[in-house]
Image 1 (cartoon, rainbow, N blue to C red):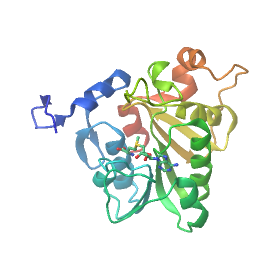
Image 2 (cartoon, rainbow, N blue to C red):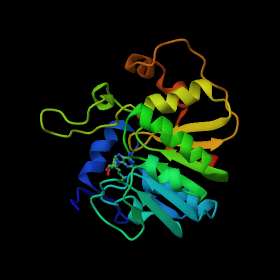
Image 3 (tube, rainbow, N blue to C red):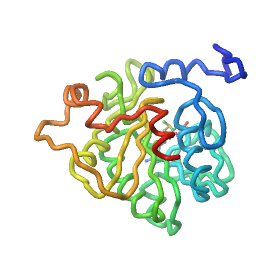
Length: 234
Ligand SMILES: C[S@@+](CC[C@H](N)C(=O)[O-])C[C@H]1O[C@@H](n2cnc3c(N)ncnc32)[C@H](O)[C@@H]1O
């Protein structure tokens, strides 16, 4: 791990996490389980600790840097091509996993293929397999530039930071699904926090292009700070 900064109480920030600060807060916060750096992992662990959540599913685990640090008792990961193999990683696409799954989860983290159509399916399947009062957490909901939300990950043989079109799936639900409660924490590329509930939808006839997101970001995403997230789920 490349060490860039050390906070007084020895919190370390990796280089890639500093890059993520392009979009959202990289701060140390007091979460339900103690002080930690704000990112997807601490946001998920805050909810797990606060509500004593046990059953966790992660869609898209890659090297396990998030999965491995999640504090839930029962964890399952699903990834067709993980870079690290843990005991409880199932080598499947999320679609294939859900076809035969019969487990209900307390919290499902969607971070698989970053394309709108796939995220639509992942969200719909996740809601079907969510326990009452459970959470769906969705990564990459707040791309900072048009480039970050391109459809194709690879650019000239390289793989620069990519949020894909996840935001469009999130935003469609902000616009048309009043039976959810949705907010997006302004940290680590935008961490969507979704529960079954009732929300005031964002009404608009506009096309879902990047300019629409840019011009309406705060209200469209229901963007909240990390501190507001902690207050909301306290
Ligand atoms: C952004 S990485 C996940 C990062 C990880 N969740 C974390 O927080 O560190 C995306 C992962 O999704 C996986 N993936 C791609 N298509 C998928 C699919 N259809 N179902 C599940 N996972 C998929 C990729 O293999 C890749 O490992």
